[in-house]
Image (cartoon, rainbow, N blue to C red; front, side, top):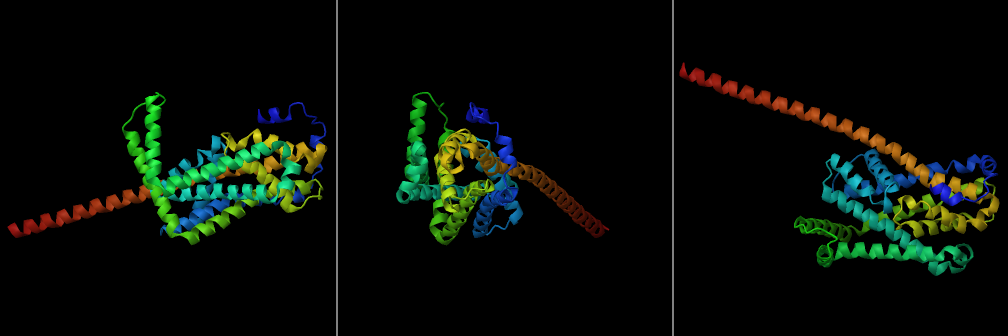
Length: 355
């Protein structure tokens, strides 16, 4: 449906030939970039777990990251990723509050990088944006506004949990009064627990500024690795009038624009923005082939790879749970045999005393 909506009415006669004529050697680096994009978050998770004194193997952190990206890709506004990450982290005996704090810090940092990129382009590359983004600038500005609002809201929730708690309770009561929500006493307890988690995130961030700085740097590199995919697609068509940073920043404009939209992976909007923003870059003949390869490598390969590693995660954690249950059973059996032996010794000693 997305492809039909974007390509409806377009001349696709030369599409196959254009893609076949692209230089595959320029496309090969795109896959490692996507893998690094997934791995970047796993590096952050591993370092932050280490700060809590929790040692988890790097490959398991990579699986946590892959699970998050897969469910983020298939749910609106990426809402499904973190709950599933917490679910799998809990299987590795990582406490839910700690997992929640870590993923909250990851989210704040991730959004903050987009805010910095968006505002930086707006302030220092106005002419560049006017040339390539003029027709879609309102979407870009809306994206900046939504991301800034999200970061501010999350920081308020994290650093002022009492204010956030009062606001949430007031909002919940208002929604109950106008009959949008049913009255539930346990809702207030849930809000209380959530605020405690956010307060823990604030304490962690305030006492680990060095770690937060490293997380920010890793996240910047991670984001720009994904932005760079489009440049390699651009060069695959033997185009070279624009440099690496220009193409990468145009792709960043799309990411900033669609990140907060309630669509899985910004589907439909991302493709439409690409055709507007990159029209001068790829030209009429190569615009759609460029879109297919860029979106295919940048989003659908991420979806495909993260789906594979999510299946791996399901198998790995099932096997680990099975091994744990076997160990627990053996431990229980040993304990039972030990108790039987102790009772037998006591019984024999009692008989000896009688005799």
